[in-house]
Structure formats: structure tokens, C-alpha cells
Image (cartoon, rainbow, N blue to C red; front, side, top):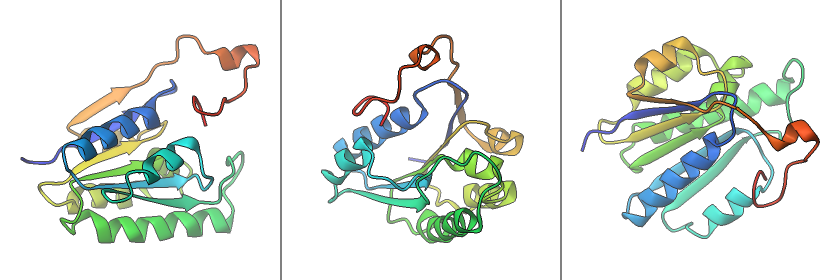
Length: 171
């Protein structure tokens, strides 16, 4: 089976959730999964859940844990570059059947990693590896290289009415 490149992008909710669902489906089929989270560093509920599959799903985070409102700090860039180096090791290794780069589109948009770095990752993936890249604002170049692009569109969201992120649903 030849691995494809998936992009889950857009302003709507569900990008990470879709990648998590695919990760669990792949694990259920006996596939080995590497789930890399850029920007994030906290133990969100999804991280706790994926740890239950530690024998088949590897999770690593490459962020400082806070939302980046302005220009990224030096520490933000260093964490993303550490993640990029790790993903370079993983993507061509044939050790994993599915590699997820959660929030990597945002990392590119914030210039924590370059678009060219992301394109190089896509080019370097082994032929059998399925690659998923999530996050708002996927670049035109990444979209062009992808085999599948899903844009999550926000039509209505309860955040607009002051509902904060809820444990088990958004965090």
C-alpha cells in the first residue's frame, strides 16, 4: 500500500480530532503510529488517551505549551526545530506506518519551521508511510503536494457565546 499525504486545515473544530481518530483506526489495524504535536506541550486528554496505546502509538510534543499570540519566542522556535529534527528521523525510517504532524501547519504559518522544511518532510517520507498534517492555515505549497485536503469550516461554535474549552471535548 502506497502511503498518502493528508491535510486537515481550516478554521473549524475537528482537525486534531480527525487525526486522533485515524491514529486509533490505524492502531486497531496493527499499524504503528507516530503522533507529533507542534506548539502544544500540556497533557491534554488526547495525550492521556493515546498513552493507553503506548505499545503501538508513540506521542511526542514539541512546544512550550502556551498559545502564541504574538511573535514566537526563541524557546518556541527551538522546540519546533527539535520536533522538525525528530520528524526527519522518523519519516523515512519505515518504523511507523502513520505519522501525524499535529499543528504543523500553524508552526509553518508562525515561521517556527519553514514551508520548505515541510515540503522536504513530505518528499522524504517513505513510500509506505501515511502522513497527516493538521492545523489552520495550511500553505499553498503543502496543499498542492497533498493527496487529500480536508478543510474544516466553522459555521457555528459555542465559544462565540463564551463557552470555554471543556475537558474531554476540546482539551
